[in-house]
Amino acid sequence: MLGLLGVGVAAGIVSTVVSLASIVSYPALLAFGLPPLTANVTNTVALLFTGLGAAAGSRPELAGQGERVLRLGWVTALGGAAGAALLLLTPSRTFELIAPWLIAGASLLLVRPPSARKHEEHGVLARIALFVVAVYIGYFGAAGGILMFAVLSAMLDQAPARTNAVKNVVSGLANAVAAIGFALFGPVDWVAVGPLAAGFLLGGWIGPKIARRLPGQSLRYLAAACGLAVAAKLGYEAYAS
Image (cartoon, rainbow, N blue to C red; front, top):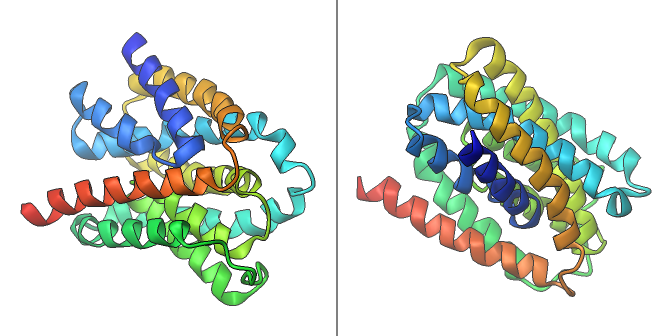
């Protein structure tokens, strides 16, 4: 219990700062003896509490963005539901092969200097991109927050910390809808959910306090570096086998 609580705190902080919660928590659940599918759905259910903690900890960055979160959140919620259904009905091998390329591409977009021209957040293409990323979060999830951060960074003309706060909430909505599907139809280990969720809640609250202290564009570069490392790791695991 204490081990899962500690993992949850660490993963919650990592999730809200560099969008890599599952890279910490999923291997930990495997190490505690959960089968892969059970670990995946259990992790997604517990991740719901990262979004709650992040929303509480990001109130300064979310000020004035409530309408935007609602406008984008319903798109990510639908995507999360679609991703969860795909996970329960299909094998994950295809996403395992595609994921490294998606994550690497998103990471390189974050490294690119911010463009003066942002895509319109009301536009159809922007909403399609958000939906596709949310499907990925509900289905496979690894580094999905980095994909979401990259898409939102291309859409929103504001400080990275404010974009990161929006990312935490709308990604949390995708996770929440997927979590409901997994709770109803997936092999969730509820004993593991409790301490992991408590850790996620605390870590999600702490993370934004760290993110808002990172200077300039360093949040983008840090997320990009972590994303490229994860892409390399997942690519090796997917293609070496």
